[in-house]
Length: 391
View 1 (tube, rainbow, N blue to C red):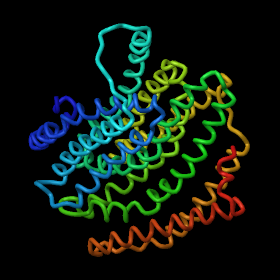
View 2: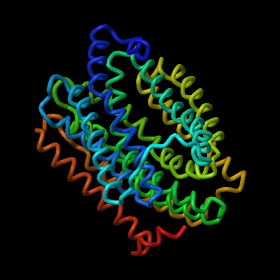
View 3: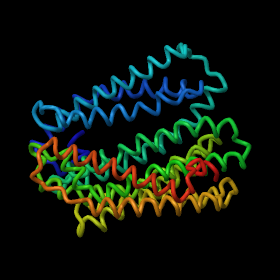
View 4: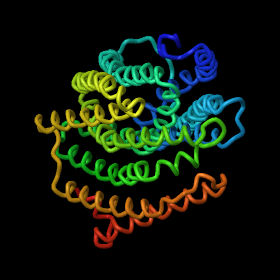
C-alpha cells in the first residue's frame, strides 16, 4: 500500500513509512470514536471540547519535536499522533460524562437514521476529495528528494491555525445555522460575524508565516537531521501554503449553510472541480518550482473553492457581504500591514543562536506582533473593539 501511495520512495523510505504507519494506525480508531461522540456533544450545545480537540493533537506534535528523539524526528511525531488521538478521545469522553450524554447501540432504522445514511454518502465523498488531494500531492512530492518532509513540516504548521481557528468556527456554526435554516437574514448575519472574527484572527498569522517563516522553522524544527538547508527549502513551502489560510476560513464559514440544508451535492462538485485544478497545477508548477509548486497549487485551488462557494450562495440569495464587513476587512488588512512592517524590521535572527535564545526571540516577536496588531485595530475602531461585532 505504501508503494502505491508513494511510488517515488526507495526501499529504505518505504520501510520507515511502514513502521511509522503501524505506530499511527490506532489513531484512526480513537479519532473516529471521538468524532462520533463529539457530534452528540454539539447537539447538546457543547462546542468547547470538539474545538479544543484538534489543538491537543497539534500541541502533542510540537512538543514531541522538543523532546529527545527516540530514533528520528519522524518517530517522535508518529508517537505524538497516537498520544494526541488518545488524549482527544479522553477529553471527549470526559465531556460526555459531565454532560450525561450517554448513548446506546440500536439496529432500528428510524427516519432519522435513514436520513443520516442518505446524507452521509455525499459527505464521505466530499471528505474523500480532500484526502485524495493530499494523496496526489504526496505521490508527486515523493519523486522530489526530501520534498515529502518539506511539505509535511510546512503543512503541519499551516494546519495549526486551521485547527485552532477554522475548525472551532465550523464546529460552532453548524448547529447554530441548522436551528435557523429557514431564516436566511439571520444566517447571513451569523456568517458575516464569523467571517469578521475568523479573518481578524487568521490574517496576522498569515502575515507572520510570510514575513518570519525562517525564524519559526529554525526555532521549532532546526535540530538533528532537519538542518539549515532543510529549513531554507521549507520556508517558501510554508509561505505558499499560508496564502490559503484566509480561503480556508471562508470555506469553514460558508460550508455549514450547505450542510444544514442537507445540500452536500454542490460543495462536493466544487471540491471535485478544485481537485482537478490542483492536479493540473501540480503538473504545471512542479517542473519549475519543485515542491513549492505543490504548495502553490494547493493555495490556488483552495481560493477557487472559496470563490465558487461565495458565488453560488450570492446567486441563490443565501449570502450577502455587508458593507460594514467590507469596511472591517479593510481595517483588518491595514492593521496586518502595520504589524507586517514591524515584524519585517525586527527580523534579524542569527542561525547560530542557541535553542533557548531562539525561543525567547520568537516569543518576543509574537508578543510584539500581537501588541502592534491589536493596538492598530483599537485605534482604527476608535477605542472600541466591540465594533467588530457589528457587521
